[in-house]
Length: 67
Picture 1 (cartoon, one colour):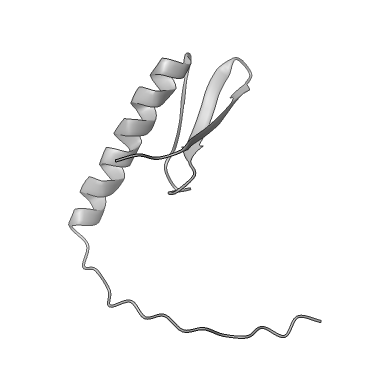
Picture 2: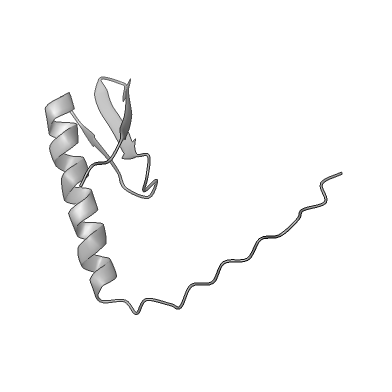
């Protein structure tokens, strides 16, 4: 699968998240370590989700009146 890694440096650490799945975040001392850690974080999220029931999803177009 392909994802977009959004990252930056904070206090000497690379910190990032997946653009397509904002809940997947991680950090690493190097960019390579960040990539490995973000992959692990994604795998943990998927493993966790596999045990949960998938709700029936619905879509509906709505108009918002924003004043």
